[in-house]
Amino acid sequence: MFKSADDSATPGWSKAAFTARSDQGFLMSMIYATIRSDYAIKARITTPNPKNNDSIQKFVAEFQKIVNEAKPKA
Image 1 (cartoon, rainbow, N blue to C red):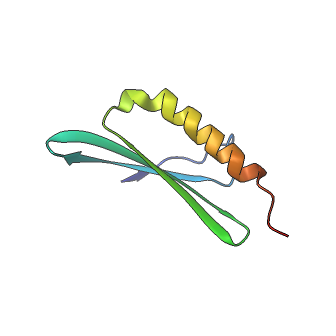
Image 2 (image 1 turned 135 degrees about the vertical axis):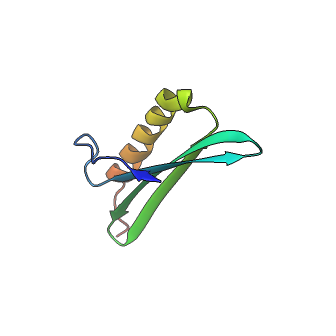
């Protein structure tokens, strides 16, 4: 498991990843987490193909945007 450096483009988010083998195949799993108000939010994305990185990063960017812009319940 390894933690990536904080990114100034995504303040308040922590990132980590790990690699594994399943059924003789390679897997890469990335974890993105943050705290918003009273909630802990975590997304875990797993892929057998690290070349999917562009698609994963686009998904994560949209996920972070939705979470960051969410308004707390009144």
